[in-house]
Image (cartoon, rainbow, N blue to C red; front, top):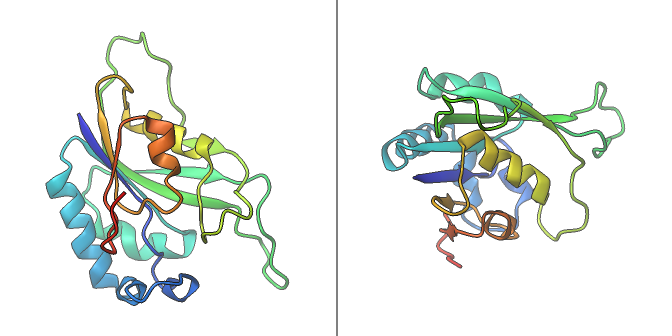
Length: 173
């Protein structure tokens, strides 16, 4: 099977990234077109990270059969004057391998692990998070492929062993 994982610049947050092409991600229509492309290009399944402040806008753009999972961050960056703190991120996912015989462990639709620190990239995901996303999709290391559309630090490729990294900003690794 062939899956995709996407961690694009979050709607309204493009200014946090040091790349000239991120500004397009501040437009909701960019996200709408991207989600339509995910569904067309990756019928086996895909997962999309976002922030809680985007969920109300982006979820209606998604196909009806998506699910929302939660990455819960026991340790997160706390910002002065922000209360309650932002300590979870939604991961919208669609499709994936069906588990019907009960022989595989059940994957929770939430996962708790700390954020990464000092990885040189805003929003870098920890390896444990990447493995959980793969588990949500039913990824099998010996059979499947995951296309990392925003490879950033490349951690999804390290965790999956069979990742194709296709940078949405023209870079490929």
